[in-house]
Length: 314
Image (cartoon, rainbow, N blue to C red; front, side):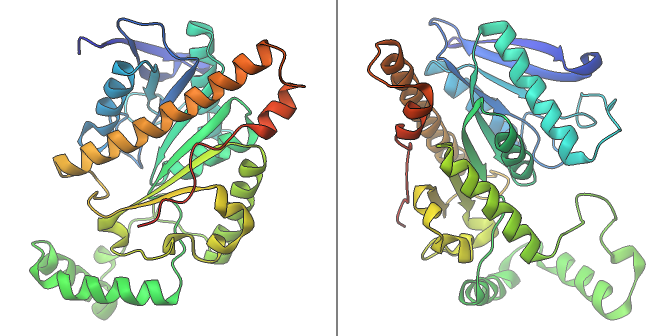
């Protein structure tokens, strides 16, 4: 921890949101900061404290960050009830950006979204131009028929040897054969699903809009959740869209969904850290170019800014 300083903060409407600001201990922070928040109903530290480890790594390399709980999760209070969950989450993320702007004067952000947090991350990026980059881990996936069959086969072959197999098999039988209500999923926003075609259309439209705005996008998929990947399988039909060429896509075979292994944690922290810092350097170079007068206008510079990464072949 000698490379980082940490400060607990309360912010947002009524100081209802709770977070932790992590800054470099021995250097001025970069002019881009990172935001991290909940993965589902998990506390802001993330599974296996992965957000803490990423924050410390970024601070050691010169980038400040804020990890915080969305309203109603972890230590943050739920005081906003007039809107749906997605709108409330957008407001919370904007409040986090406002806080860092007041504290450090930083107006550009990388947002790290995991699992259900991916929806909130892309939603705020679509409406707030302070977001210059998104790292999205195990979010929306649309594997097509071949990939689904291969995934199912591999899971079926591996399942009997997994310690959780007996319990899962019993619950599956209760749910599908006996109609036991106690075996059915609990109601709530964590289990409700939209039809696939609606999710694909919504996610594809937002990705296209963000790519056109030159927002850098890193899409990461774990080996444990998705099992196999040959040709950007998790994007499905979206992978054939012209805008998909601008996405940095990586299938992380040795990383599991909840970062159970030290190897997986190290791979994830290194991958996201390298990418976030590359985005920050790109944005900083663009600002210097504008200041020196070599760029015609901010809009032109943004349109010409190179993306931090494209397809990573596996």
